Length: 200
Image (cartoon, rainbow, N blue to C red; front, top):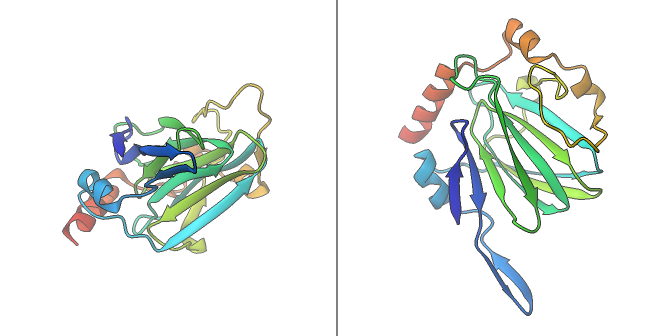
């Protein structure tokens, strides 16, 4: 399993080793001990989510209050996605920037994003299914969103894809509005949370 940091601190691309034979294939989908070597602590998994999406479905940009926020480990089990990690941490050197990783059932790559980062998942095929491992349970009062079509963020969606955005995400503030409303995580608070997890 290869774990590679993305240019946004706290985000990683995880590429598993696949072992095919005449029965199919076998692979390790998650290794908490290997991930901990990069995080400095083990990811605590308390909830798994499964989303099934039609082509063009856009889920996000979502994030949660820090603390406790919610780290995520995301992979595709059918179909394919573009997974966007968005740095919405006020004060971060890469604030407002994003990285994308293709998730599919050929490479079986996964993405890890730490607490405080924004997340958006875009389905490239019908019946695309993603599995999320989450470090905290869903907390509706602490969950927020940024409009995924905000031109300031400028997510690079495929030109031939018609985005399908939920009413809730379409009504979400843009990045500038979310910052003005005090909704965004603070980078120093995220660093402090990461340090507390390492000491736990």
